Image 1 (tube, rainbow, N blue to C red):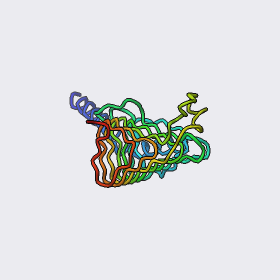
Image 2: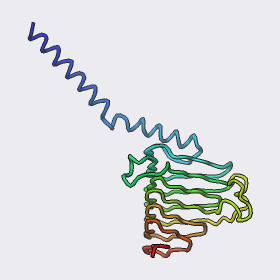
Image 3: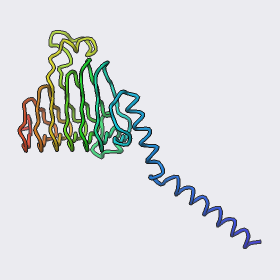
Image 4: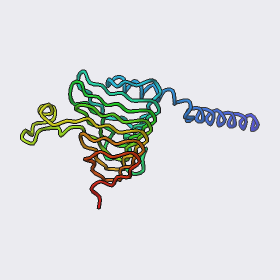
Length: 209
């Protein structure tokens, strides 16, 4: 009787541990996670290939009519602090604000709690990344004489394209303003405010003394 009971207990434990292992194996959930991420982005009108973007938390996507948001392969969007120990103030925000506006993100890029707002064009090259809470705005959002909400006054604001090259690192809390072009292999320091173009290979500290 004891032998049979021991066999039953052993078999039950073995079954439970087997089920736990199968359920917690990340490989079993990778396809489901890719499916959820892909469909979330496609639902919000993002041009993306299946399995090409990894989401840690869900970003905020705002897409104006007849605008475009395109994301390349191997891109990670971190919208929760569990994905970045530096701390995320808010989810990644990708927003096109006017018809015809574009956001184009190349392959192998990474963003953590970043904000990218485009009224005309923001182009980010391959292997570039934004540190925690960094942002890029190609617009002033409203004129200095009209303080209506962006959805009402954005068409009256000054807007100029932003272009960020390949292998560019934008440090935490940095801000890229309208009209800026950053060439390849640049580093922008944490907290910097970028108002002017940056030539290739430069380490830019901006307004930091």
